[in-house]
Structure formats: structure tokens, C-alpha cells
Image 1 (cartoon, rainbow, N blue to C red):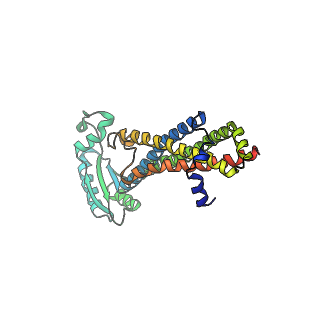
Image 2 (tube, rainbow, N blue to C red):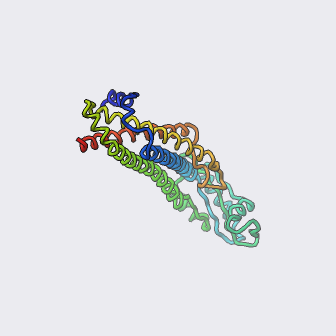
Image 3 (cartoon, one colour):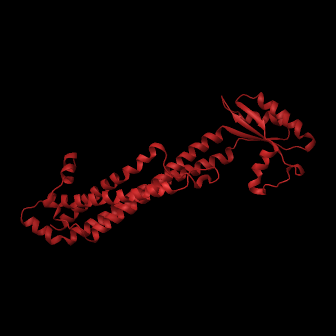
Length: 299
């Protein structure tokens, strides 16, 4: 089907539009399905984009940081901490390294043990925060040197739990796109059923039109236009409601973690505007296919 054929099918034709009743359960079904699917597509798109942003942020932030834990008797803790800092300052790929203060370590433990944890009476290891720089940290080589000079040091480059987190975020991103494809397929199926029902209900009108010389292309165009514009209207309303719902979601915050910030940012707000257009395209081809097949059956 050429672009000219599509334009002709979508062009306003008052004579042909009278073929398809403007109201009825098929009209309501098309509007409802298009609106509901567009509403769900907005949230699926928001989830996919937010998951992609989170995966990128986790991959960037966690890849550039590491933690060194000093497990040593209290009498040796300060000396081993200073020795570890000396090793880190001499290590290529380490931009900076600093020992966390007691208050900072208490803040890290407070979500699990409460704010009144008595660190001074417990054998808490000393944590050293490492920020990586160019040309990158050689974790294996650093572990060997620390093992020889600082026996109580344990290096954690976050790779054990960074990769599963990033993989989980990317899986959510893929799930969002798969959901959008399934929504498009369900929309096409429902509109096809509605178009078939409308064609079957108007079988006598179609027979009369054929007797007076109307071609199947003329009849199919009437149904295609009606269902395409219905789908466009329903999807536009559903998209508007979906975007309103996304606006009402809580904004991103460290306290909320992954449960906040599910939405659009910057130019991402333009993407939902494509949903009604895609819904109309799906309705166009679904109705065109259903009309051609049904008209052949009615021949």
C-alpha cells in the first residue's frame, strides 16, 4: 500500500462515512480499548526509561568506587589503616582514598541497627572509601599488595552486587519495551474484532452498496477511517490521563530509592505524544486487514 493510498483512505468522505454507524458498541469498544491501552503504554514507557536511567547511573557511580575494610585488633587498627592509605596513595588508578569517620560509619549502620549503636564498644572494622581515576584500578594487583603489607585489609570493588543490580535494571527496561509491544498487539486484536463485528452487523448495507456499484475499496475505506480516528481519539485521551498519572508520581529521592523517579525527564516527555499516532497506525492496518478479509467472505 503506497502513501497515496493511505492518504486517500484517511481523507474525509462524507458519503462513505455514512456507511459506518457513528455510535454503537463497536465505537465504544474501540474508544475504550485504545484509551486503556494508551494509558498502560505511558506507564510501561515511563518504567522502561526510568529503568534505563537507573542502570546507567548505577553502572557509572558504582564502577568508579570501591571500599577497603580493615579487620584488625583495636591496638593495630590505626597503624594498619595508615599503612593501607599509604599503599592506596601509591597505587595507579586511585584518585583519592580516605578513612570514614566514626559518625559516617554509624550513619551507614543505623538503618539496620538504629541510631544509638555504641561503635566505641564494638569491634567495628575501619572502612576506607576509594574513588577510582585514570587509568582504572587494578583490583587483583592491589589485593596482592595489600595482602603482603596490610594483612587485615579486604578490598571490595562492588562488582559482586553491582552487576546483578545493573542486570536487574536492564531487565526491567526490556520488560517495559516488551509490555509496549504486547499492548500494541492486544490493541490490534481488539480493534480487529470490533471491525469484524461492525462489518458483520452492516452486511446488508454492504450488499446494497455493492449492488449500486460501490467498490470494496470504497467500503473498506469507510471502516478504516472511522476506526482509525476512533482509535486516535481514544489513545489521545488515554495518553493524557497516563501522563497526568505520571506527573502525580513521587519525584526521585535517595530515601525512596528505585520506587521513586519513575517518569519522564527532559525530552522524554515528547515520547508519550507518539503513542496516539502509533495507536492510529495500529488501528489503520488492523482495520484494513480485517475489512479486506471480511469483504471477501461476504462476496
